[in-house]
Image (cartoon, rainbow, N blue to C red; front, side):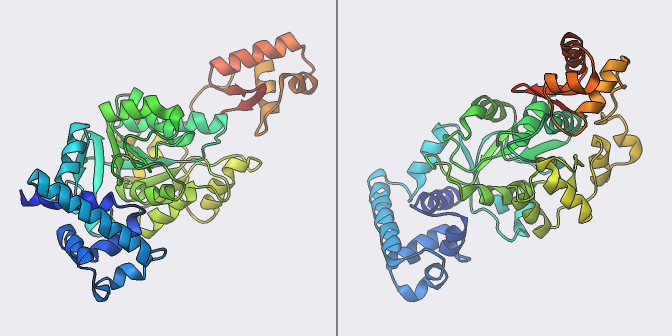
Length: 382
């Protein structure tokens, strides 16, 4: 009962307006949630030092929190239960489990984390420590090459029994998670909103599948919308949960680099996939490689970083193991594609072949996994 009362109190604090991770830490300031609520309701400014120096916290905001907690006490009195337990019951009825991170299966991760979440909300399988976890992140505006790599890494890690962790964004994140799920693997999707606010909407089916076959995770209660500032905060949870972080594609100042910074702060190894030097979405990953991050050329590289032997990692699929095309025209078209996208008309001019021949060649290359088309532009994927 005491644990349930503390969960309810944490949930009540998390539900206060304009409370994010930093303000939540200031509200708690080393105390239990029940003690923090009592201190806030007493209203003595000398007991709120850590809170009042938190950026954006004003007397008006603190007053609104006190009013919200007064209403919560009234509800609790009428229901005959501790503060916040009514919200806890509503989450449970919605199929959401709650966990105090430092007391759960992954508690050792959070006890040494510089910014642990106060509370975790989940759907699906609860977190457990007996699995290796790899974070896969990258740009939302990925190339065909990036899509291919994300798919193969997600699938290869799943086949090796490694859990794939990511932020469930469109692009690299979602592609890797979908591939891992479809290969029967374990997936953790960390989101920057309440679990009832799907973002992006295009990934709705992936949300549902992860909640049913993996773990959907957030530090926000139901009803919390997806706001821009919540995504960098979300990235620190992705970094904390993974044993190794892999960046597939990123622009020079891409959002994935927030996760890289969070991983470095936590001592997590960061690896990067090499990309064409002419590609904007490989500028960030190539820079990471130049700064000394190990390259990922196949799934085995990641497994070795996890401490697996070469013998153990060898069966995992390599990224570049397809045989070269047999047709001379196909090889010529592939060479002309190189690192840059081209239209079929441009390839006709480059190769000297007819449009029908080039179209047939592109079809063969697409079927064999060597090329992909987006809005009329063809791109080499390997």
